Image (tube, rainbow, N blue to C red; front, top):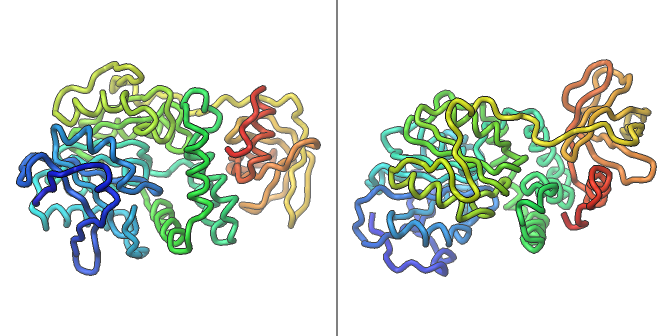
Length: 407
């Protein structure tokens, strides 16, 4: 590997280098303090809506001590090559092929969101190629609610309901109930919403392929054996803290740090706290037990985290209407309600449709919901949040401060 030594953030938007592995093209940029640097490099693997430009701050911080490689596999980031036939495992194997072809020393992947699953699979399938592993937003997508929301997102895109898809995706990635803690700028939320509303046909196809890979993934047969650090935002609803803690607990050398005042994008929302934890880790030093804005949990506590991500209470007006355009409507009693889901009681028929349900109080916009566990007394549900007005009305119902209309 010959590294570039002239890094500045503008270079992250330039044409990347390309490595061809059989039919597949891998895009990358590689930087270091010297062109022939032989130290173990950090490998950046981003999430579904991230490009190389997302990592300008991280590259600048890391270059003082490590070579840094940014990699886009087929269908990821700025790499537009379609690769719908590749599984998550096969994409992870391409990372190993990349390392072999360029004769790299063992890598230190940093995997964020979608990229965390790829990084973890690479580490578990190719342990000789991985020195250390840093993950944020990791999950095996086994939680029923997260799977239903991912499936519904694919259905909305297939139906051409891109506005509804974007609204729902935004509210699951960035927890709107915790904005006073996460300090996510309204401008950032608007920009991300616009980005998802304006996905091209090719970008939609790529998102569908990536999401289907996650749904097809049956879980980790083995976990990374190398030193592994998992960073979790305390308000992350999409990949919840307890899920990430269980992954860290399954890694023989796993550590887990909780980032205060962050949700799914912890590394971008709380840069200083995250850096104070991962920089010692990448140097091979012990992970600090406490830093400003973050703390590392003892291993014996990782299986004991609370699994309910929000308080759910009986609403002041429990009577509501449950409606489905094809099979009718029922008067129901909502026994539990939170922003992201709840539970309702009613005598409902068996064989209910999986989608198309609305829950409505007389003076509020209808709320799209997705049933989960169903019995003869009713069902639990997750809230889709595909409509800004309905989400705002629910937020007002749960707490005095209403959700912004653009959220």
